[in-house]
Image (cartoon, rainbow, N blue to C red; front, side):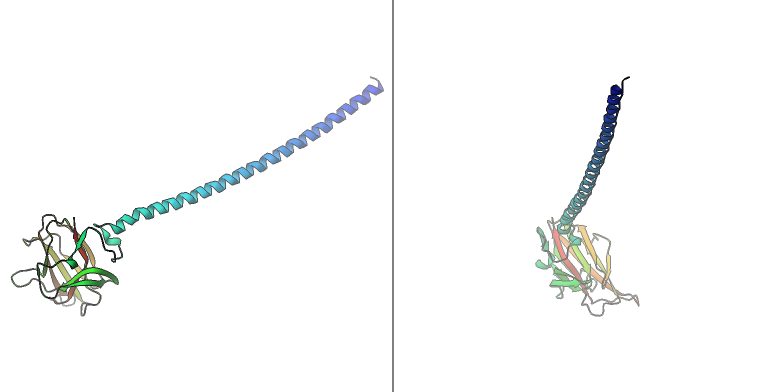
Amino acid sequence: MTEGAQERKRKSKSRFGRWLTSFSGILASVATIVAALASVVAAHQTSRVNQLTITVRQQRQQLEAAGAEPAAHSSTTPSGSTGNEVLAGVSYLSALQPTLSGPQVQSGQQAMSARTYPNSIMFDCDGSIIGGQPDVAYDVAGHTVFHAVVGIPDNAQNATNVNETVSFANQSGALLIKPVVVSLGNPTTVQMNISGVTQLEMTCTGTNTQTQQPDNGEELALGNAYVSG
């Protein structure tokens, strides 16, 4: 091979080597760019997933809150209410005239366990009146549901050691539910079916928890007592 040919061969190899070096550098740069783009995409996807997670959590909380609202305003189960709402489609006993009662029945706001009930009735827990008559009775004909928070008013005098047993009966004296027992600071919610009941009769008897002797004459309140249906 002539000297000129050898020189051309060396130059050709040199150019090819530089090209390989340059091509390798380009590949390395491309790989770096691709890796950077992948990192950006991954970060974007992670951010989007996190945002979607937050959005889903917020929507779930909103749905849960929305689902809880009807229960608080339900006319049949308003036990979660503050006691200050005026429910639609109900008749409060405080707006009705009792068909049987002593002179002590009062209508208006009462407080039990630090919660106020503006549409309430209150009467003395005296036990059965002479002749077996209830303490108080109301005409509830045509209604199907009775609801009330039963308890001793917070401002009741000398009621610290008293349990009051309250019975609910129909016009024939038959009990509608098992008698409930309440004490100061411990009211209970009563809800029952009164379909077919024309007169709802209520009788309250007090007992001294220390002596286990009758202790009548303290007040009994029916907070936001109503009939509906």
